[in-house]
Image 1 (cartoon, protein in one colour):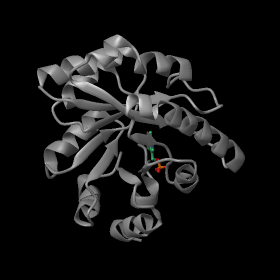
Image 2 (cartoon, protein in one colour; image 1 turned 135 degrees about the vertical axis):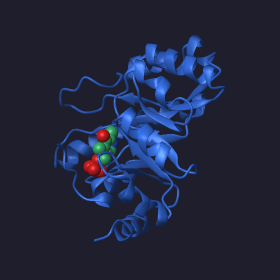
Image 3 (spheres, helix red, strand yellow; image 1 turned 120 degrees about the vertical axis):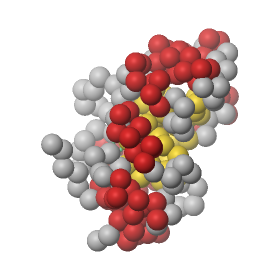
Length: 218
Ligand SMILES: *Cc1c(COP(=O)(O)O)cnc(C)c1O
């Protein structure tokens, strides 16, 4: 199957309001360009250096999403062009994004990553921590970023009931805060579980292997 065929098949399955982030980590530019020529304009990467390298080589109408865990000292390399940062999970990271946004006179959109998986994971905020950040005056006063939604990663499991429970928990938080904070994006669902995630309210899916094939990590 070609990238273009996979992409078309996927799009046929996505309801209209769902945004597709094509997760292209580890794949070469030539492969991303196949998706570009098939109409895809939103790409997700999880490493800053790799995203910068691809940004430099590819057409400038692409929106680049950082979907991986982000270290503060890497924000500066992508602050001039990144379109959405999915994995924001601390005040210190928000402060750095604000600083870099100011330097580049940009307004950087961010999602707060919430820890929804029952499995042990280091990343993501508890609901209480997220609520504190969302409604903190310091964050509200940041002029070069805005929190526009929530992101979560479910447990790596086939158990549909557990996945549904985890997606529902994030969807409930989104519903609870979206009016008060004007949230737009609920980023949840990957190749194996995007349909379930959409059923639970996701409006932004991050899909890699279902478009580009399995990844080889070296
Ligand atoms: C790699 C990755 C994805 C995509 O995973 P697939 O199973 O290949 O669709 C989605 N979200 C994040 C945060 C990732 O790191």
